[in-house]
Each structure stands twice: as structure tokens, then as C-alpha cells.
Amino acid sequence: GQCITHCPTGALRERDDTAKVFRALADPETITVVQVAPAVRAAWGEALDLPAYMATEGRMAAALKKIGFDYVFDTNFSADLTIMEEGNELLARLADPEEKRWPMFTSCCPAWVRFLKSQYPDMADHLSTAKSPQQMFGAVAKSYFAEKIGADPGKICSISIMPCVSKKMEATLPDMYSAGGGADVDIVLTTREFARLVRAEHIAPALLTEEAFDSPLGESTGAGVIFGVTGGVMEAALRTAYYCVEGVNPPADTFSDVRGFEGRREAEFSLGGRTLRTCTVSGLKNARDLIEDLRAGTVHYDFVEVMACPGGCVGGGGQPILDGVEMADVRGPRLYKLDEQRPLRFSHDNPGIKKLYAEYMGAPLGEKAHQLLHTHN
Ligand code: SF4
Image (cartoon, rainbow, N blue to C red):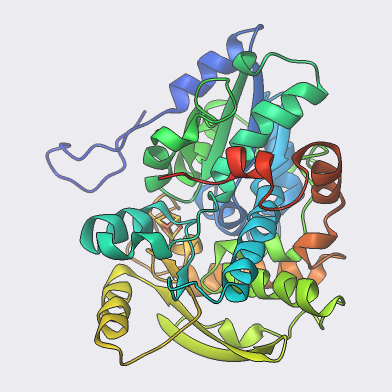
């Protein structure tokens, strides 16, 4: 691989895992299952000189099929699954009069989780126990999906394409071997490594005909897509929490007050007759300030979303680097547009998710979900 860091000595050479992917693709015994994170679709074209209007999700799926993955799925699917678990966890905490762990923190950004556990370990139990979409996807690929195609989970190589460097570390944590087929996610590539795969295979994405993601782990909603931008997890969770409490879907944009790129943003909503106080934070400096304020008792929230990268995953460290230009506020609106265009915009309406619970997982927060979809320490 080529060295793309700016470290003059090369000592900070980025780990390149593309060779591992080529080995898995070349092995006829291995079933390769790839997932692509929401934020990748907002940026992959930049690394391949593909104009934004050409860099569609359909062309991205087509490029992955051309590379030769057996199943091309979407992390948006498991983003919807994360919302089912995390939204219900929030409601369960709200319903428990003994609950003291406020606010509940989101847990899908591994850099944030590591920051909190190392810097403020006494607050680690505020984190939602829901795994990130990447890890939920891996656990489902090697359990439910393996069973569906009659495959030994050990024969599946689960690969993720992420906007993020920390996701490589997350995949190796002790909780992430839950489905009995080795690591739930075997190889993590960044958006930049994905672009390298495309170039190595001499694929010209502009010439590809758009293709759909495979089913059943390729179906997704607008709520899953916005996971890649700051405020998106919060907004998606509120959409589903509202449905669980009120029994009907609100207009999909009811919670758009959580959107914004200022780094820290408060909002209040009424849910089931009470006021829910939320805060959305991106950037670890803002996260530290927020925690200090919480500890000083100057602010009070029920639910807090934290993403380590300014602007959320669209601005992640594994995304294409454009000479120091901040791209998060250009890529974020691309995801909001996809959300707006999706026929389904609520995680609980995803037909693939409904099927997964009905056929395999049982109920959110149930026994099987607890084993596969939540962390335990
Ligand atoms: Fe990774 Fe940054 Fe997204 Fe966190 S915010 S998951 S570090 S890309």
C-alpha cells in the first residue's frame, strides 16, 4: 500500500488492510460479506475524482460487487437495528424510577467510548450498552445470516468499510466475538482503503450501472442514513422512541432541532407527557467541556450523543483528505438529502429489521439481543 500520512519519517504509517481483503476474496472456501457505513457514501467519490452526482449509493454497491464480494450489504441496516435497541434502552431507563445514570450517552463512536472510559471511568455506566452498527452488523452476519444461507459462521469473512480509523480497534475488543465465528468483524477498511481497492482493480466507477444492495441485510431507512452526521443517532432514536410511546409516527422531521455543525447543541422535546432534554456534541474538546459542565451540575440532560470527530463520522479520520479542507458540513447535507428521499424514514419500519426480530432476535433488549447486540463490560 502507499503511505498517505503526512508524517515525514513514515513512522506514523497508516495500517493498510487491503491485502487481507484480497486474500479473502481469492479463497474459494471463504464467503465474503461486506458492509458500508452511512458516512462512506457521502465521501467515497472525492477519493476517486467522481463528481457528487455520480457518486451514488447504487454505483458504490456496483463497485463492491465488481471487486468480487459475495454479499454487498449496508451498515444502514444495522444502524436501524442499533436504534431499535438503544431507543428501547432509553425508554426502559426513563421508566425506571430507581435509575440514576443520567444522562444516557450514545455508544457507537469507539473513540468517544475509549475517551470516557479512560478519562471519566466513574461515568462509563452512563453509556448505552448497545453495540455500534458496525459490530451489530458483524454479529448478525455470523448468526442470523449464516443460519439463513446454511453456512458455518467460521467460513464467513465479515468486512466493513468505515469513515473511521478507531473502528479497526473496536472490532478487536473482547465483547466483539459474540456470534461464535471468530471476530464478528474480521477486517475493517477505511474509505481511503476502499478507494485503493477500486483503483487496484482498475474499476472506473463512472462507467458502472447502479446496483441495489443485497437483501436482507441491505435494507435501510432514512433514519439509518443520518447516523453518519452529528445529531443523526439522536434524531433517529427520537423518531423511534416517539413511535414506541405514542403508537404513531410523528412527521419525520419533528426532531430536526438536533441538527447543526456548531459542535454542541441542546434541544428539548415533549415525549409521553414529559420533557426530554437532549444534547448533541461532536469533537472531543466539546465532549470534555460538556462532561465538566455535567459534573459541575450546571447542565442537565436525559440523552446525549457524542461523536469524536467534528461534524460526526462524515468528517472521520478514515475519509478522503482534501488538503486540510473541512468537509463535514458539505458531506452532512448529502446524508440529509438521502434521508429525505427514502420512502421509509423510521428504523422500526425497516422490513428487514422486522423480519430479523420475528424470525430470530425476539424482542429488543430480549435474551438473544442481549447476547449479540449489547456489550457486557
Ligand atoms: Fe469514528 Fe469519528 Fe465516527 Fe467516532 S465520529 S465513529 S471516531 S469516524
